[in-house]
Image 1 (cartoon, rainbow, N blue to C red):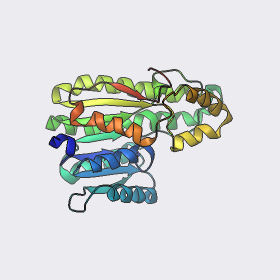
Image 2: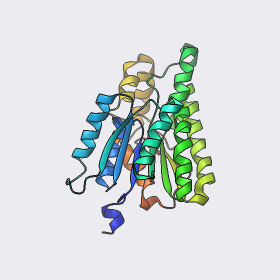
Image 3: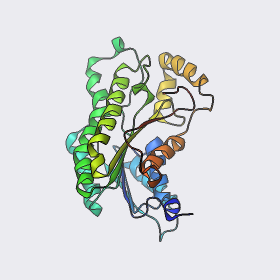
Image 4: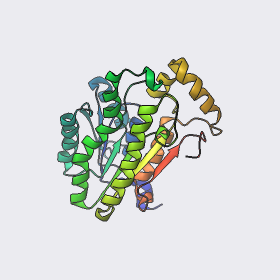
Amino acid sequence: MSPDDAAPFADQVVLLTAATSGIGLAAAQQFAAGGARAVFINGRNAQAGERAAARVRALAGPAAEAPEVRFLPGDLTDPAAAEAVCRAALQAHGRIDVFVHACGAEVSPRPFVEIDPAHYRALIDGHFASLLHCMRVVAPAMVARNAGSIVVIASDAGKLATPGESIIGAMKAASVMFVRTLALELGRHRVRVNCVTPSLVLDTQAHDRVMASDFSRKIFEKATRRARLGLPAPADVARMAVFLAGPQAAYVTGQAVSVNGGISAA
């Protein structure tokens, strides 16, 4: 077994947004187990954040080898808060080696004509603008060091039109194209940028919201039947994000990889 296999993130600093539950938390645990020097997790709820940090520490291995694990509170739809979170992680060790963006907006799918225009901004900010806010700090820091890996958790809704996800899909499509373009711009600085696009993921708040609505439940129950491999859990999606961030994906950039159990071949 090579050192990269045993501890692929040895001495690396990792920042994950929206990582107090679901895919973000599962990825944080996997980075910690992979030897990361520091794992910073972000979220809006302080109690949930500290519980999540404790879970990451518990799975990180012996105390002598355990990484620094810190919760950085902040609502990333606020540009100032997003900058503060990213700068706090950057200043702690002078660099961010891996950045994972897993933000979204807490809404249920519904037809566009039923969406209150007052909610447009929350969808745009949660699903896309929050990524831009973070990149204003993370991308220049990685360019300055000529090293880094960025992974964005988007959605298959950004690849395939899905009833009830008009704005969500538009913002996830924007995220996918942003990732692809940023990968071209940052490649000469040895910075890789990739995207993971799940569909429905078990044991997540998003899954619960979808299934709580008659409208979206009917759509996604039909989609679920096409998942011949079964629906993935957060850890399954997180494994792809961690792979894309790590040394085994050293020549992978600008990609948007679906992890959906076979719902589609997007």
